[in-house]
Length: 127
Picture 1 (tube, rainbow, N blue to C red):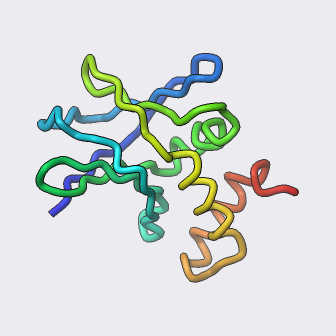
Picture 2 (tube, one colour; picture 1 turned 60 degrees about the vertical axis):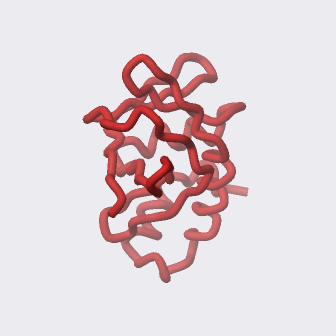
């Protein structure tokens, strides 16, 4: 069963965005999987991490969505600070961008989640 790590904060230094975890993982061998899914029940985006056993979830709840908007406007993918190690979240921007445009006007994700995404990412979704 995948372990879920909640991202509750991050920092932006010019064009670099770095997220931090509430609890550090026990496995320092985590790698970026380059894929993102949603958890519409909990109003979150989930970036997949992997190790030799399987996938783990990096969960981005609504409290960090403003930083996700800034991530989409940044030049490069964000990173995750794990202790003294920095992990680049490869494919993060592309995956998130694809998801928010797919969610826009699509109640298959749930009307509440779709509405929340449309509001939070309105400046990205505007033509």
